[in-house]
Amino acid sequence: MTAGTDLRPPRVGPPRARTPERAWWRRPWIGPLGLVVVAFFAYSLPPYLALDPARSRVPAPEGFAAHYWFLVAHVLFGSIAMLGALVQVWPWVRRRYPGVHRFAGRAYVFGGVLPSGLMALTIGADSPFGPATRASDVLLAVLWLGVTGAGWRAARERRFGDHRRWMVRSFALTMSIILNRIISAVGVIVLEPQIATTFGGSEVAFTQSVAAIASWVSWTVALIGAQLWLDRRPASPRARPEKARPEALDAR
Image 1 (cartoon, helix red, strand yellow):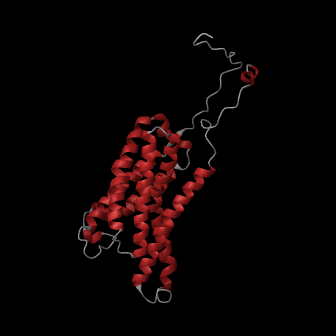
Image 2 (cartoon, one colour):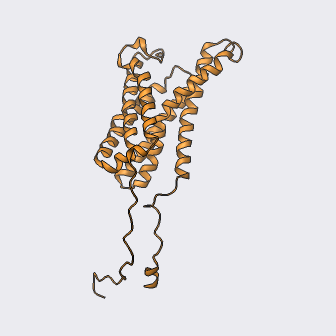
Image 3 (spheres, one colour):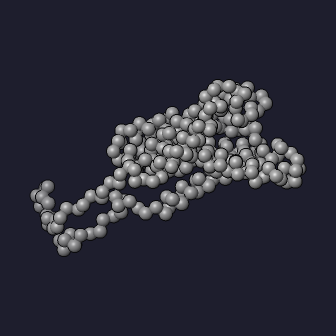
């Protein structure tokens, strides 16, 4: 046999058609997600952009004078992570502008999740909302850093399937803060009438209970939802093994 000789019979039939690419505006979830993120920024950022500790929505724990400034850093870097995540999950950007996707990915990891996660570990371990919320905040920060690091490493090793799966989990944890705020509002509405009964008239017990419920439920539901989506999502055409062509079988 001569090296380089191709003994396979020529392919019969027209060339395989490429799957048409969907237009960016045909992704119906991109617009609503962007609006939700903008609304969240409009609500959450002003007290921290003002750099006025008196406007903080989180009371500083005793003995932690720099708490507000750690919180400001966490919020600002977390905002970078949310914007980066929004760009990362946009399929149109990934396909048309891979350079933008890579740049946004680096910004997401090193300008967003990494510093914001480290700040979350610091302020979460000393949360004024009680021990249950502290445990949730610390675990969330560890998981956030861990899954994002795993996704970055997979990309560096060119294991892009694993990279996407880890980054879906990271995206869910990044956006879980929005769910946290929604659950907090619902918790206040539902549980506030029970302050005199369930909480024995204690505002502290009421506040810590609402914070703990919102903290634990938000990121666990987001992470479980991401995993269910990953498990139920059909494999992409590129990932499916091709069936043997009839002419190839005849050539054996």
